[in-house]
Length: 168
Image (cartoon, rainbow, N blue to C red):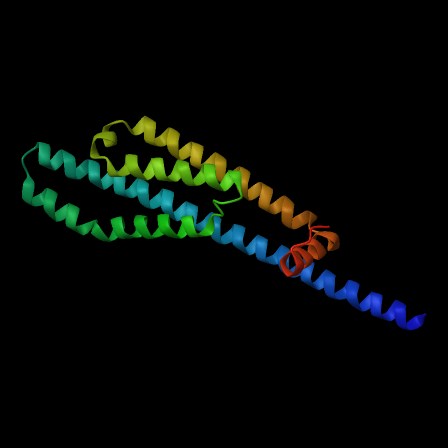
């Protein structure tokens, strides 16, 4: 009888460790994702600001200054593109509805950011950005709740469903 209690205690302790690891990974994912979203939105704001300046210079027939400023911001274009791609890789757009919605919002936003005509309509870009922030906050809150409430039964489900395809 004592052996059964010791074995069960050991199994429960291992499952608790696994649960803690999963919860920590979810929290780390959320922290990394939050930083990446912030970087994307900050970089797109900076890009919009500088592209407006480029357009103003072109409209004033100051082509050499416009070209110089544009070329200085090529690195920022690359960073926005890199952040967008990293965010897409963070999202599970095959199962998670919130992730799908966020990815769609980001893709529409990036299209607008890259459309120089939309630069004059900054209200639309601000509204799109606010929608992205709201969706990100909801998604991160859910991730936090999932990490907070993860329990041993869920850890068992994860283990058994991956090995046997069986859901408990």
